[in-house]
Amino acid sequence: MAKPVIWITRTLSGATLERARRDYDVIWDAADRPASAEDIVTMSAQVDGIIPCHSEHFTAEVVAQLDPRLKIVANHSVGVDHCDLPALKAKGIVVTNTPGVLSDATAELAMMLMLGAARHVVAGDRIVRSGEWDFWSPAFLVGKQVTGARLGIVGMGGVGRALARKARGFDMEIHYHNRHRLSFEDEAGAVYHETLDDLLAISDFLSLHCPASPETMGLMNADRLARLPEGSVIVNTARGNLIDERALLAAIETQHLGAAGLDCFGTEPGGNPAFAMHENIVMMPHVGSATLRTRDAMGFKALDNLDAFFRGDVPPDRL
Ligand code: DGY
Image (cartoon, rainbow, N blue to C red; front, side):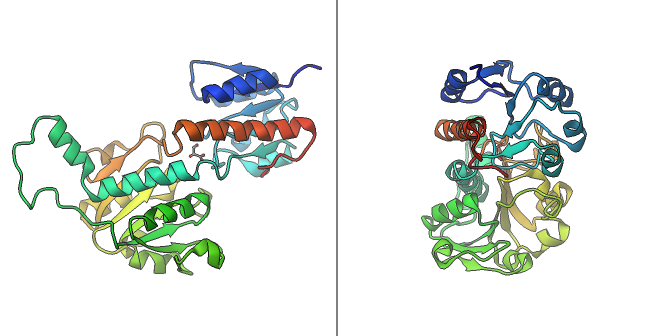
């Protein structure tokens, strides 16, 4: 029997590509460029399934033009804000994602950004690297201590809970806001705040881990940033549009916010050039899940979903 034809839009891990080629007729372009709307529409007539990343956008307009041959979009991401889910569902296209497997890697990056933002990593690295380090004083690059501080986590899904576990190792006091209160076991001592505003008021550090949706777009606006304690640090490894970037910039410029650590931006790729002049904004290019182990796990999960679908089963991560 002929193998199903799948299109892998980006360069996935070597082990993923190897397994995919073993089980499928794979179309993959080593040029590793994000696919345009036109590419997606054209390819939909040539394949039975697609493994896209968050860089490929299945908007309602694109979905309306998809060929009926395409049966499944098996995302290589946990976030699916790049997919118009109702439009795909209406078209009968199955959509899956990769929850769970990237929680630790993303939480590690959130921890790194939090520590780096708190301890002036951008300025420190620049000073040493450039050979400008000709001075030392107890007043030099004095940061904000993480140990014992209150960490507010917005969204206690897999990544939020993984961050809480790591932050406990730094003796942080964990607070959270979530759509639903967690069970006693999952809370593991974290303090639940029924409203986001209550959480903001006590967050020395705030880390965002909720999905991007029309409801959470611009969640951290000027008003909410103002509710954070003076000198607090905000971290975002979720999605750029959770933060109003102009408001963030203003809060950094007035020094209401002490620092920020960002892996996600409103414009990707690219980021926000206005942030570049502030060394208390630590930035990474959306690489929260970019470890080899996690890339393998994400790729394998996407393939597990495809395998189940083409076997005639319900894929484990069907949305
Ligand atoms: C995700 O899985 O949503 C990450 O942001 C990588 O795409």
